[in-house]
Image (tube, rainbow, N blue to C red):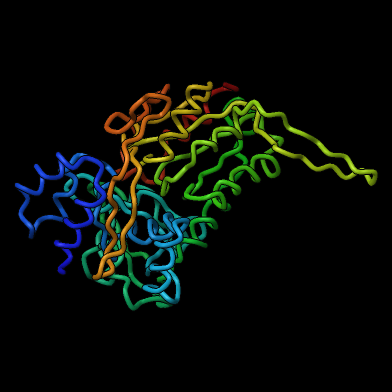
Length: 362
């Protein structure tokens, strides 16, 4: 069975809306099947290949599904990894690539790449997220960028890394946890979770809030550009009604049980905020958190992953999702404070974060 036939068979067995699927299959050209999946009408039906960073990140994100995880381990016996310099690219104006996020302490960060830089070439070959870095792990490459629309090209030297999502995303979350000074002089805790797909990622957020950031007056949670995957019960940490206990031993040592963050919280979102992270933003907004940025992706459905015979990844939307009766699919979460941030040639300037720091105690 070829890959196109595999995709159609899996869609017919699992896709949430069989009537829409039949209408789609009647019109789609098999040679363009993969690129036309978005026409079916569900955000979580995608075909991803190993030349995409999302492919590797989603392999890890769905590792909590035992059967799928076993197949991934058989397919990747040395673990899931890809070559790169530690940045997330995004297509911008003119179908050009731009740096959307930089992993802290990555080769890209050390080389001086900034969010908004146009990504032009790798060792003279046109830039692409994965392919130009293949076979270069541990060696230096020349990354050609442009910082301003009319500016000269720049050449930066970066050492190509073997990036393992399981460890690198958690390491980036730890590094993106810090105390920042707001304009009004207050100390603000800032956490950017690079993934929330699984309790291990969420524990990094909660542990940071109750330990490293406990003396901050408020918290900014940055939900942009992450993998997604947040569970609805993550909102309990901020607004849950179950009590927090402090257990005091005779030695004087104290242990907190069921800790919460009870101070103000703001969320940073944009069109890269998707899936479970939109559910989290919706839940926190309804309970008083301030949401800042631009409308989220409106990509909220339940999906099942399939690793195909050519090692490509198929996601199939299997369930529609309502959040307390509200459909977010196709709509997204509208922010309380709208800040439209342009990625192209941003030169590292982040007006959404600046707005989050300017809330003056809210």
